[in-house]
Image (cartoon, rainbow over all chains, first blue to last red; front, side):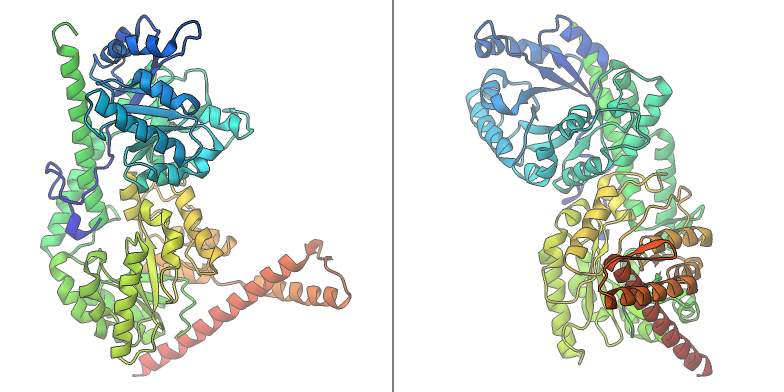
Length: 329
Length: 310
């Protein structure tokens, strides 16, 4: 970020060339099965920013026709509370699954099991055809990649660069551990995936995307944790660079929605940063201290970006509140 | 100029006489004349015009001189930054080989115009974004100029790019720091690496923090560090210089390994520790670095005496 591309202010629209930080307000994701009879109620009550639909392929019938018949209603049900809706597909059956599950109302797909860029290219091509065939805006469907294989980690940069549809890495830590030959255990005194997480965050950011994940040990803990532990874990995940997490327990969602955004205290501090820096600039100084901390151009830029981030998160919450308030919702 | 020794490279603002006029007395190995983020937009042009005289002011005590320019103003900054006496140009927020090649070509032209040996001024791409990190190998191989790899660490700009707070109590930059340093090492390019030292206060003026940083860097054989405040200078310089005990040990290792080699053996023991070719190389590196530090300190001492006598 430079002085030439500085945002005009915390409430201004992005200037040309300015990146949105983060790109998406997608703090909490909840996975639900389309076979769940309570899909609509669970999605609505969750207040998740996004719902990932899992569509089981029933072996006892023509699963593609079965899914085609049920997906539109499932998408509608999942979106009732204002969530974005994705469908999870497996790499090995990706094309057939896409044909069966892509309908209007989806924001994109979560591709699981990818091991290289070719998998993303294959999905992207099929999505292009399906967008035309099913009246969906061309290029609008996103490809998010659930990372659960060593290949996906090793080729993460090529995967992220494989298609402009790429949006997000979701880290499936339990499966990744197993596929790396490690026990998915929360009992170690260090995070065995620390480096990989940092890699995926860096790679995703380098293409303008983002990474979703939780901090250790909750990332590998099957049982739920108390509220305080979840709130702290979310904060650490955010400080690592994650912008949201898939929530194995619906109780995490409110902590993710509150934690994966600047808090009101942080926003108040950043307002002060912007004011103090602006005063410094008026005096011809581009480096001024607050309590011994140096405030210069990048700190000022971050303050403005963070206030925008806080505003965008609030707008997303308002959007979901409006969806909940709709008559018949 | 012994440019290689940069135990403490401190940023100074040419526009502030309080900083630039006193810099030579503070004992830094390197002063970075900043035209970038510590200079207000309205002061940039005045700052450019002060660079040439600031070189003379800041290097009176024997320090090397770097100039940090602005990425969006490379064409405007470089004619004011490339002068005899400048050892390195620091190019912030570098993200592509094209960024580097563009700067290199302008520097080359200015070197020729100003009687500076071609390609003698080093160029340092500062890695301050995720994209720069992922493109590091191509950046480091983009030009024939001597490159010094700077950053990839947890700087302010990197935290902005990743959308994270600074000053967490854990290492937020595990991958980018290692990736950038490894790329440089694979190319035999000197690099600034890093070891995470918590600084949750965010203060940049605490000498005990500098001492902790120096101890951690020294243990990891990282020789170079930066500073934003004079309080960091002496702790970094003393902490990143091999101690007399380390030099004595290194000499013993070299002697012992030479004797082993003469005896046709590859592995032996010295004071209970295994000595082999790796320990030998490490000892040679310690001695080499100690000699470079001593030469730099002697150079600075002579320069300081001259300046004080003047």
